[in-house]
Length: 251
Image (cartoon, rainbow, N blue to C red; front, side, top):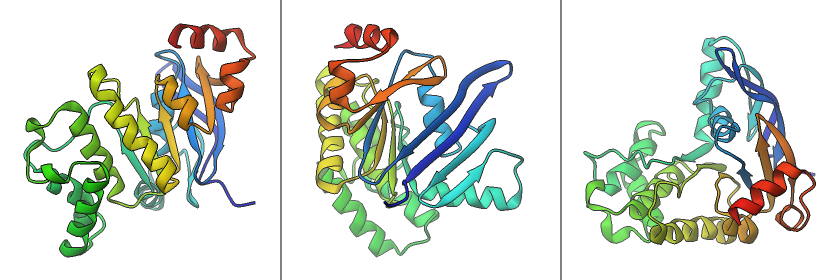
């Protein structure tokens, strides 16, 4: 059996005296779509941000595509390992975080050019192909301010894919969108999973997406994974009353 693409062991995260994550263990295999759900404040976004060290774990070990980093002091070797790990993770945020002074195509090309040191021609070709994939190639020369929220988020997905990551992290990617725009972003994510077999960890309340696209679900509650299973198991017969109460409220 192949090694997991993402492996998290004994992950703890505290902010001062507040312990937000209390020992998370999870493996994510290639092509899996793991849906992380739970109430606000349960640690979901912190978990995601710890995977690529946007938040520094208090304790634990994270491995992404063979790059393993243990929580600890910021040595030169550790900083290098984190940089390599981040190159294997694409991340899409709740807010789109596009560079407002850059055109759409320049936003997508920025990281491969500056971080990956790739050639302008190769990066531009890949960026245009990615924009075509997310239905935004006709907006390549526009600035983000001229785009709807759904369009900006699709560009943000193309930008995250431009570094050719082995796993994509989505932190509530539709929560800042108007309801009529949510479907266009979920459609892109669905294509990523179904057509490209992209490994994804998705923090979301979109239970329709979880049911149709997810391969595994994790219910976060007060800093732990209280329950996990396939979508069929979670929707048909959740084992914990907290899980059932939450699903009853959002479905």
